[in-house]
Length: 213
Image 1 (cartoon, rainbow, N blue to C red):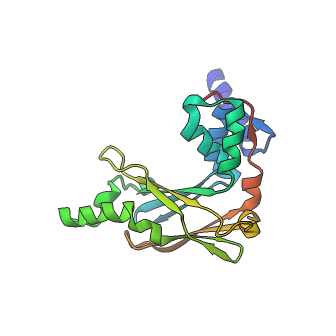
Image 2: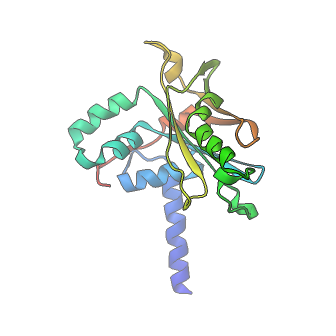
């Protein structure tokens, strides 16, 4: 009984830590902070036995993920300034496991190899045409999209979308009080979906105290 009480107290304390905005986090705690829905960086929807999750990936995430093998404090700051010129989201599409669906999405609603190939092509290339980002009253199209994972071991897929200013000095792009990630799904028949974020949540992400992964 005592052990359960200690564990419960630890979990509650951790939840409070990552739901609150602090000035600094270790890199390990930084990842936990990004995953916590209470911090406003994750949005989810369940439609047609599928789950869509949209996550904002801040500049520091990109630096740590893409350059962790040879990162120092000096080049971290330099790289961070580059990554701050873009906005990155990850769209994850998977089965709605909460309601008992565990099927691989690449086979959802299809029965032959021809349609399977088309599904993979749509997720790899055509999906970029189905996503837009609205910041205030201005629309932005992805400058890059990357399909992260399709394999038989993972029932869902992750797609990264990178957005950048339309022109030099585009102040609207960084005046992100309201950000609307719009996915007009023409692959799984889920229709038009809005994932609205508060830009203040992006601006309040704590910085990292060290670069230890």
